[in-house]
Image: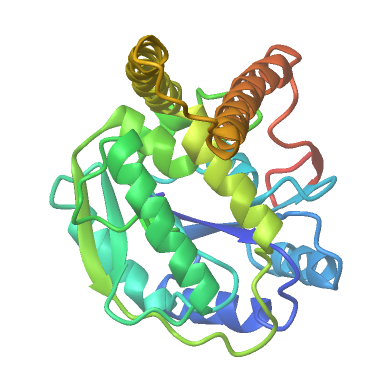
Length: 306
């Protein structure tokens, strides 16, 4: 099998049938397998995926026991993919299946991973703002090429997939795992359609969780940033101490009640934020050491399932 197409599914009953029909119009069963992962949908997506798996001989349906998040669901799908190349796409129909051919053509030229790039994104402005923020952070924390947009629509060589699925922690971030493995990255411009129905499954809380995973799980730079800020505060404290000693010796009166309170509040806030950051690192380590699962499979429906 040359191509596997992994699609995490969440509350997309209105789009699924049309999406799979479009994929099969470009990639019949003998050319590509499709892997659907139901990530705790609350609509009729489960029944539709089950029907599709029963009628398509090269479609694997994996149903998770609860909502684990998009990246966890993708990790589940990657563990079952058999293709030489594995394409990852959303379930909302905004990534046209015809564009998978562009990704496939590009990666055949020798890239490990090829990302889709959009000239005109049709996401909500908050989602677009979040994407710009995540790219800004990724540029500085994960050595991402500055001209590369980390889109969820991409294709990965089998060798990189094998390395990605070695990660067993409960907080996967697919692009962070890719950047750990390779810098042989390509990109290709694709169309991004407007969402025809429903709304994004990403709430503000879920977006923040994804960004925190990226921010904390793949770099020690946040700790180093706070260390640098601490050094600056220490130097500022030395300079202020020298100033106040001089003022005391020269009998210059500086009541400074407001400045003292503001300085204490500023320093206390910095300490609390830093302790929270350390707590996040320790908490994630605790959950990792406690063998918290990335995903829990409820059922599998395909011709290979026993």
